[in-house]
Length: 146
Image (cartoon, rainbow, N blue to C red; front, side, top):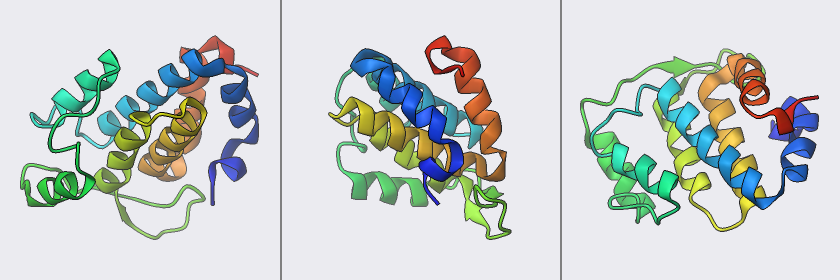
């Protein structure tokens, strides 16, 4: 299931937001995903969020996806919580692993793709509670309201 099945209208609103708005949405979605997964205060993840806010390239270990994932799985401080799927199937996914792709997505070079990919990764982080994420996005950004 993709973002189009979850909230087609949100896609259209993000597209209409223009590049500057799309960058803002992408960074916001990455922050929301990491916060929801309990990762936004992890000492080696914080610099990546700060780099996103400045519009800089992601620092190590996020400058190499494989190295970032290796660090992620090696860090015993990372919480392990599970979420269902965005459509409510009881499959269990590691919530923290669903959040990390939002960070990579938000650091891309195509604002529309980055915003949509970060939103989708954030939705996966929320699981079947993703409508709460979309409602929060609309409250945060009037340009996304219906």
